[in-house]
Image 1 (spheres, rainbow, N blue to C red):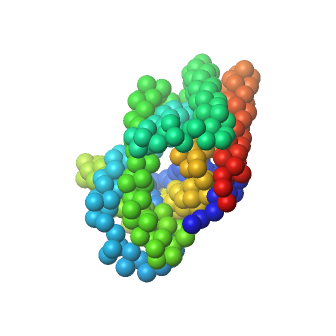
Image 2 (image 1 turned 90 degrees about the vertical axis):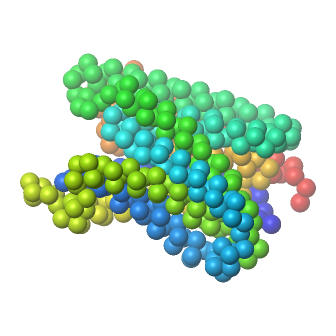
Image 3 (image 1 turned 90 degrees about the horizontal axis):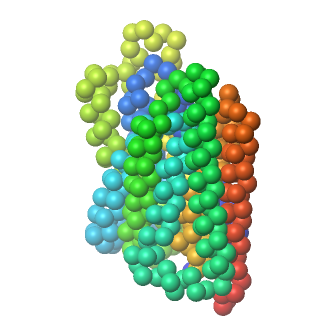
Length: 354
């Protein structure tokens, strides 16, 4: 049995959240490619190749684990992962319309609520779990986190108005981005169900000595499902626009573009995305009685880091001082939420029998 250590678990979630906040920034350096070329290449790494490689490197006797694992959880994890892939694609497109900060606030905010509370509600364990020590800190952390997410979204809306007023908006489109972010948020929460559905597979991996890496075997199924739905959409776009060949040879008129740079940025995106859930698993197995809060902690910190990324990318340039103050307040509220959730987990861990 893996000993609970919520403080270490939260730190590992922070590393994963930092990777998640950074994973789409390399897209800004991709030139001469259509969106579907970049998305297909990064998806091939983050949702297909790296999960297989990661499981092969960390799961002892992987072949035996897969042979013994029940087929039902494999199928459900795959299908739920495919639904998540649709959400991931919507997420990537939404960034083009409303930027990193607002996309993360809306999509991840919705995912935080659904992905944190629905699984224990469905399992019928939420009431029992919240009767343990530290429960009031957990509830408070979730409530404060949602307030911070709402505040972040409001700041993003203020930014949209500011940038519209200064005519520096470019491709900013609130309505299109909002709809895509809502879709991404709902289907992002489905990913948590994909991981939960694969728990019987992880149990077999534990029997073979996988230890803290037990969850990596589930990614083979959940992420492959995501890759399938993503690849279908990207290949459809390639066929429609006749752009598949640009993956190996840049089109005419793209002399200033670099094929190696495009590949490097797409691969980097894939590595960062996979890295977030590699560390998510390492943090999750250490969270103790309140494991279900892993999703909230991970998502809230993802928004924290996305705000920082937005500042570094100068997304808030041209916004009014009051708008910048609003996003700063949102940042502080989110920090408070993470601290409350971490402390609640810590109280449960020190009060548990050892």
